[in-house]
Image 1 (cartoon, rainbow, N blue to C red):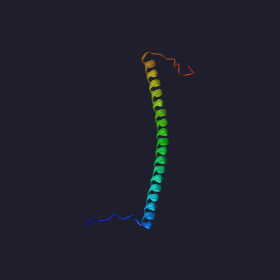
Image 2 (image 1 turned 90 degrees about the horizontal axis):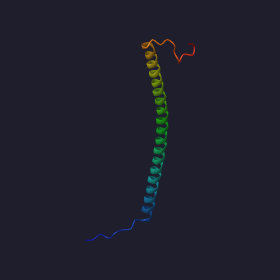
Image 3 (image 1 turned 120 degrees about the horizontal axis):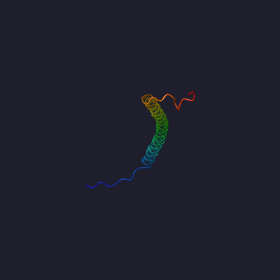
Image 4 (image 1 turned 135 degrees about the vertical axis):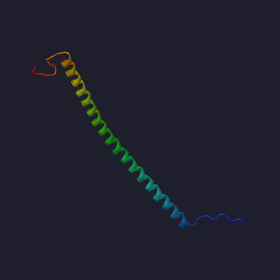
Length: 86
């Protein structure tokens, strides 16, 4: 026996449209939340990167000055070009 295909009743169509509309709205809300989270993470990453770059530059500067002073001491140089009082 063959079953005849049945068209959905008007109430079923309305219910399906409502469900689709709700799911579409939920998907849009999720997309907006994800975009906001991504932007927040990008801002946090940029701030952290700036902090790391500043810390790295400070370490480079400190290492350079330490090396400069060690070289002066090793070579018996008394006058420090970085020291304005000398």
